Length: 387
Ligand SMILES: *Cc1c(COP(=O)(O)O)cnc(C)c1O
Image 1: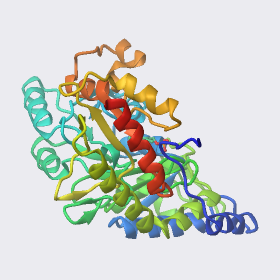
Image 2: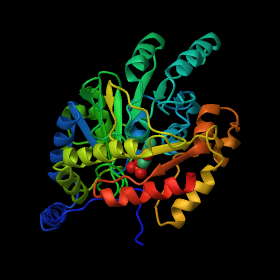
Image 3: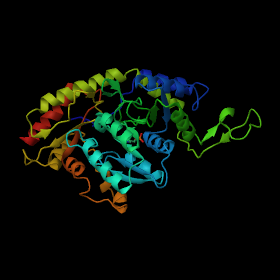
Image 4: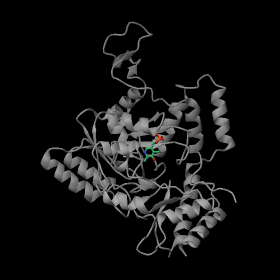
């Protein structure tokens, strides 16, 4: 029986031709494919600016730097996320903390955030940046977070690594209506891939320019941006400390070609998620939330084993699925329970909703080329295991 992965990339002949065309062209990096991909991505995501980067981790890092995060800054994120959502604060020398999740959406809880902000205000420890994560592709409660941001004076970096193509309040995720900056990932398992890659979107031209400088050594060739008068047409000046977080043209060409199919791939993910909802109905499982004001990108279809209705453990169900060649996974081990974060003072029990979710969670296979027959096979194994 063939193995069904939990996620896998979709590469077409058109994708391959787009990459080969760049290989035959003058530029492998810093060429025209980057701005073409950026412009197209920005337009599709309702943002005026998009800055391509080497990966979303790099994007989160320079998003924090662009907003002035440094030693003494405080950054809060969701514990139910990939490590990078929190590591970006540590790279900047900032202090990291977490806000527990809402058990239904599995995203950062708006009420927990509000309570934590009120407590932080009292002790003079308000965050500079909050990083909500659109877990599994479901947009976080950004409207409420924007109101809190305006009241308490923090900036929002949305980690939309799972949410390429998602909608919130009738608009694509990516503009600056709610978040100051939005970060997307193009890792191979994500919605659109460039193998490794990421994008930061914003409507703020000054922030966009700062991101461009930060991704390439903090170096400018624009005379108007120089601090010393240019010595000649060869002049470049480093005006801040940047990094080399550039995307290559090969990757941008792949991403641009993939964007041609974003809507079709999303439609297939939605259809598979709807089908999972129907096929798993009635089993002792908690299924992903459905909210009328937002459409998930369906990066993941994550279930929870409802231990109040079955004696079958998450581990047993997971092992049974893996033994049947169904490539399930678990997202996420709460970040604060990682050894590195325990050394910073966090401990199990700190964010109980994230820990409770993690203890029962399994991500089922979901990718655009998954067939109904493959999905039926996965569901049959789940039914058998829970019977
Ligand atoms: C994948 C992921 C990242 C990191 O993305 P890379 O492009 O691999 O650096 C960050 N945050 C979340 C939530 C992710 O899933």
